Image (cartoon, rainbow, N blue to C red; front, side, top):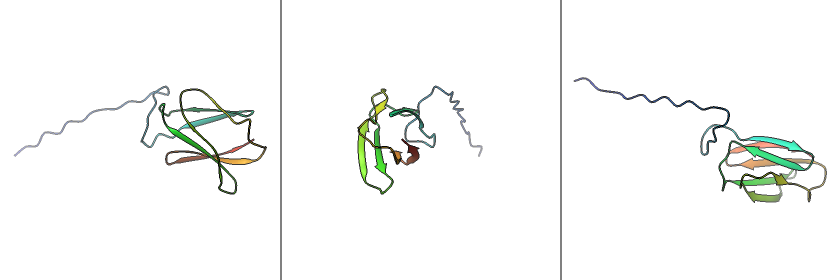
Length: 88
């Protein structure tokens, strides 16, 4: 017997936001302001010191995250399974 297979094409543009996937979030640091893209509102963002202590956490609401309470240094930003090193 013949089997029918349906194939759907998914095309993502730069402006599409994807959660729970293999599309990594994008982090842009400007001074002590962290802008995150490619994540959905309500996504948890955690920031860790170089020693591994969580120093800040936030729930993404579409606005940049203020890091004014952090000293200069190296930090790790975690969103889901993705991590990024930043330097203040």
